[in-house]
Amino acid sequence: MRLSTVLGFRKRRIRNRIVTLGIIISGMLSVAFAIITFYGQNAGNFVISVDEAARIRGILISEEPTFEQQLSRLMTNPVEEARDMTYSWLKIEEVEATNGNYTDPDHDYLAYTFYVQNSGNETVDITYYIRITEVHRRLDHAVRILVIEDGVQTMYQMPDRTDEFGNPPYYPDIMPESVPFLTQQMVMRRTFTNFKPGQIKKFSVIMWLEGYDPDTTDEIIGGRIRLTMNFTVNTFS
Image (tube, rainbow, N blue to C red):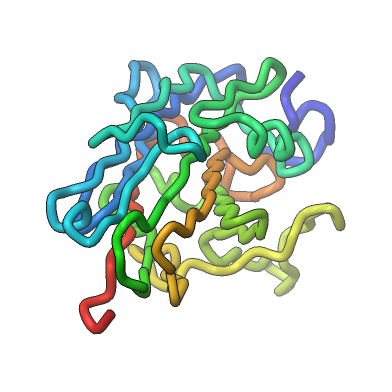
């Protein structure tokens, strides 16, 4: 049953429509990925890559915390039938307990866990950011992006619009307070410092169409969004 049907919440609903989610991750200095959302066709794979410059500094990626298998690229499976849902429906514990792809048997959203390791012999500072590179039908206003860094959750969204009376949208108390996108194109930017040799960081990334968002309407059907997430070794490190 769809979220909007359960809540009786929105006047305009996404009526029995399917949005296909997929992710493609490609590298810049170390790790990068892009999320693509399509309606009516299959999306690409989710690819994480490490380029030559990052490997020289000893930055590695893997779906396994043991790093027994170190690949130049990691791929996820596309999510082919995603409808609007909400934060409380996410199975976050299961996502974090599953290395690589996580497929929810009950709801459709993108969820992927991977690891970043400093296998070099120098301590470095790393900045990572998520940037929107392509968007159609205002899909960027309806999505939520949850980044979990070593167990710490941060949820990002496009700033909400108020209604004609100046009131913000209603969201359940269980939903975490979101961080607004930095700009129309830049979702977020963060830095973790003193990434020591042998240290490993764990990341889980989840993306979904938020059913409580008033921008989740029929107008986004057929929309598409592409984002890149880049992990960069700071040049002054």
